[in-house]
Length: 238
Image (cartoon, rainbow, N blue to C red; front, side, top):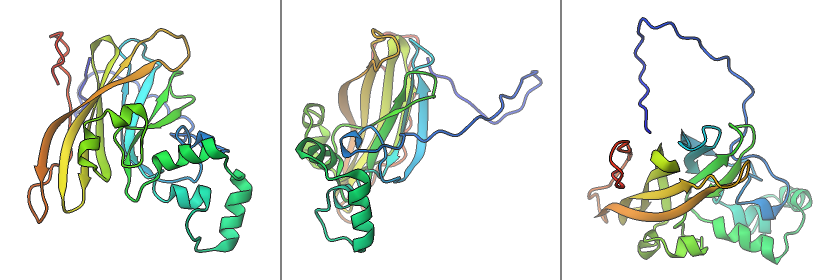
């Protein structure tokens, strides 16, 4: 189900929950093979949206503009000239020299532009594990290669929004684009299969392109998507 929250004040007696400790989403990490799940170099994640599973309220899914891939290869693999050799040496020491599998993980998220990422919690927000939305320019995972976004070779993604639907479904709307070329609004569908207690059960299902425009020179550009799910009818109405 989807609920809308407004800033209106009414006559209802409501209690305000106290603020608790802030948590980093996605969390910090220590080794390069955790790059897709964590944030080793403390990059920016901004303009987030969050939804709770309709199958289990403690299972949370948040999406945001994610800069973890920007300069990731430079910082973690040392495959580009560093601006400061002392800093580069410190990073090599801090994260240790990655092996082949770890290098592949870092390259999968590396890009020149920000992409849209996310993070999932299975315990009401106490702990988190990060992810990137499929379809990114350097992401060659099976889910990403099967995404229709790959056809257009978009270089960036921004402004993700998430809504929860019946039966554990999540719908993520996002803008993908290549500067001065083309842009699109896509909807990615996930489902909380709720078959493992306390473990990761949210599965990516598919991506659909809702709108596509060419904007090679000051033409139309799609921006700021928003999604609401129909809670009554069983079809995939978004």
